[in-house]
Image 1 (tube, rainbow, N blue to C red):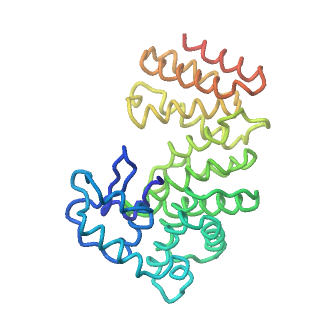
Image 2 (image 1 turned 60 degrees about the horizontal axis):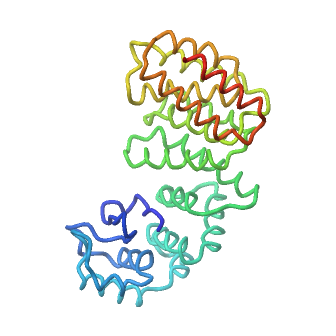
Image 3 (image 1 turned 90 degrees about the vertical axis):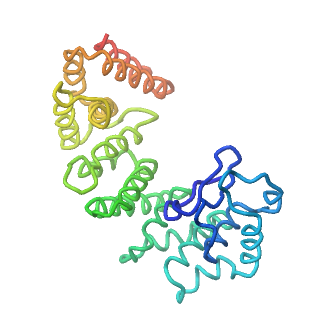
Length: 314
């Protein structure tokens, strides 16, 4: 069962054991579109669910019956989506339904929306969610998706609304899964803390994800390596290195340098070792060993190099 779009988080929850979505207490009066969404996503055969028992605080049996009836009377999702007279939220909700019922059509329409030079801002959370759930087989389509999502992340990281923080992080996670290795330098602007949303950590994580299977095969972009090294120097310091985001930035900056096979990684590991913070050294050793396992099917020299890096901390 896929996750529910965050736009509806306040109205629905999910029983993690059964994978059944249910209405959170206080929201039993559902709008038609939400009833339709609930029905389409969970109740392929809600009738089985209606037999109970229901999750604690779950939706009542009468509300479920009402939802089923509403869904039967509602226009098909494809018709709602294609109706340009519908509000964006109605069309976007239909698109979320189509991800489950007609993924090929949903993929085509998501790509068409991404091709639009000017996209209504109300679409953004839904589009980001759709790209996470859909699969893009063609390289040209993948390039379109990651390029547009990166642009969305760079634009909306300067917004103050809390909603856009989730949008930015989700977009960047999807970018990392689609971005070719030779385009990784495009992530460098995210390593500057200039926006309302701090994207330094998620930017470093994205670099690590791009090289999750094997290290960089080409000489890394010097500007990218320099910026990662600056972050590492700043955060590998007793005055700022505390568990949480600061230690995560310090750790991931070292891992990113290792992924890029940058010459900066060895002095940064020695800098970390000199701190004699056993908890941090333990985290780094574990992460480097995990990376070594992921790279196990890569060339043997890369794996040995990681093992040598790990030994610096021992």
